[in-house]
Length: 199
Length: 81
Image (cartoon, rainbow over all chains, first blue to last red; front, top):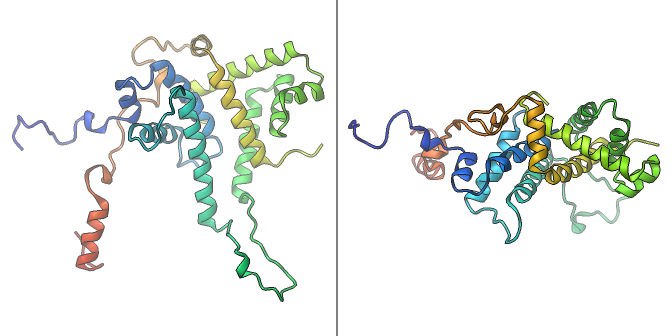
């Protein structure tokens, strides 16, 4: 290849531009947005298998926006939109994983044997591996707020699907204490999300 | 009280914590970074670790894999390209 060729081997960095760099270059996101997205990606990667990293989630979400596969609705800010894409990527991962293991099968009405006394349905619930991983992640999240009784109470309530009012009522937590705990939780999440230590 | 099953509990908690992070102001992000000794305003700050850097090139970045598969099929499965 002639030395004045624009192409070089190995390929120059601009040919392996990451989606993050492209999005930043196109001013779709700011550096501050990226820091928030990093914390969000690290959160959403919790419980996913080790081969699906937070970097993968974020790059994939940005790539979908850059390629036009996901269009940002007018009036929606980029960070919440990308957080939603990462959330759906997480859900998509688990749907596929469930499909691969055959954990979920559609049963059509015409497949039912009317003479049969028994109806066998496959278990649509999570696999034991996923349940174990989820339990470990719950423990890891609890460790983030270790010693903060109110934060742990809030966490437990959130896990049970309770609303803020229900959590406050069941835990006898004042609004001021609740809001302060949320602030502490946010700070702990940001600190954890900005690091690159193992989850 | 019986604890909630782990998978739906984790999903609910992650969704709720996502809202918390989305509600964080720029000042809160900077404060958290400063607590960690990070200076996001400086070039190469540790806060950006994992966000930039070379991406491992994949074969389909350079080749149309579907076309290659089609050619391979047309030549027979045992032929390598």
